Image 1 (cartoon, rainbow, N blue to C red):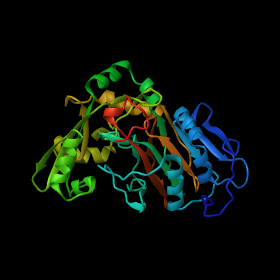
Image 2 (image 1 turned 90 degrees about the horizontal axis):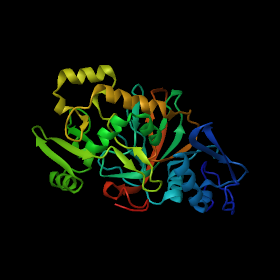
Image 3 (image 1 turned 120 degrees about the horizontal axis):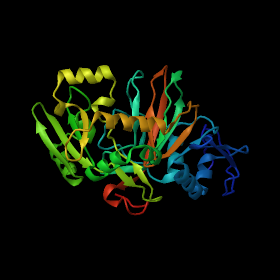
Image 4 (image 1 turned 135 degrees about the vertical axis):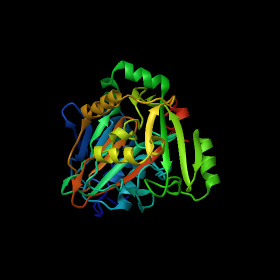
Length: 347
């Protein structure tokens, strides 16, 4: 293969070891591991195809890899790299945020306004199935802000008190979601269908209870684990949307507006303990603080590709100014009832 990021045809280098790339930790004591060319003429796609095992072992150790210095790339080139590392890409199902397709199964990152930050989360951790790997590629860095901070979920778990971890381990968490055309996402957008029967069938298959409301609205409830073991490393991780979906994580003015205009059970998203009881404010504060303590951040550069193990690293987004374009691809579906199995289990 002679295609490389940046659209320049380069002769592939045939070596299968790591010497063609140099690496360093982004910070002295934590990942991601930054990988960049050590010699001229490295075709990143070809290199990735030949070095999948090395990529995997470094990813499991550090949680994230940042490929930097390989030149700008297009969406098709990004797709080639993702496939070289991890095979076929996934569609974006049971959505929780607006985004649009750019090329094949390459999407934009969340299409929220620049003035809004996005809190830490593991992609689709509220679902029955999630991607084990998530890839980001920066085409256009923001003029200011717009970083994608990441947080090691092993560290988040260690930072939480044993009482909180035990509570969530025993009870799990409940996600209550309301879908309407007036606020948030419609159920048609979330489930990518206009067929109510298809939505009901999907919900039953993944353990979601549902309730159709007036005005073509839908309410769902899903009880999921909050603490899991990584299928490859067997490390326990804090893996959930408990803080992300909770009302109190929203901007204070937005949260107050929602409190004043609608009952709690009609909010677009909210979280509870798995038994339906309220999560204490101090617990949510501790969870949010743990993410911040475990986080690292970096300024995007054109052509940067960030690969995360989606169970080991949560990600977020800061506010930004100016244009910003970051693309996303996801791979390797893994199901919650296989979480104690092997990493190559498929849903």
